Image (cartoon, rainbow, N blue to C red; front, side, top):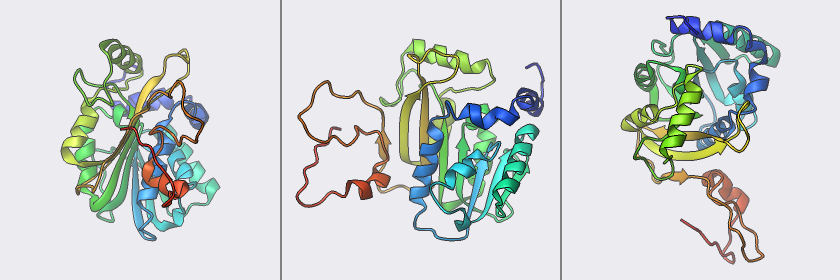
Length: 281
């Protein structure tokens, strides 16, 4: 795509595929549902009047997914902010079909978006931060209207830096390969974006995983991450990374190996006084 303007590149790229965007993307945007479920769990204490800003929300599919995890009526307003006109048209149509009265499409540059209500309880970048060239500006602008106790969530593809957190670390070949693959579609999955966010917020939750993507052999899985942060220090950080399954284990029930969100899973586990929990850390 040779267009010099970012909006023109987006419009040209998605114009002919906007109608099939949701169906195609659900095959490889693996972190999206995990992000929304984790955010919904952390918003359980807020029952009404919340504001959610979904930056780069595209077709509004994130809102549809979120409705599986919480009642959308708990939001006073949901803003889908996206610069791409073809995707915004799909989102507008979806809002009408779903009958959402509190969901609004804002075709605007995330770096310049102003929130009328003043502050947001939830801000998400779902596979969009890697597509914003001026990511510093987009992050700074969104943090300007993040509420003091608000959540800031990201789901995206990534490569690690040369020396990184052990649960993110990748070898040089993987770093080069995946960054080159995504670069062909003007997607920058370098470590700088997450690193910058971590200089501005306190991490509350992180998950790093791998998932298949179209047109790439299934044995080669793309790295993705989910990250949630807050302005205030969290009581504890829930840090997770996929780990290989043990070759053999005594005949008992193994609940995951750090695959899921522990905060959301506690009610399911329902650990009692007579239970024994073996934890590998």
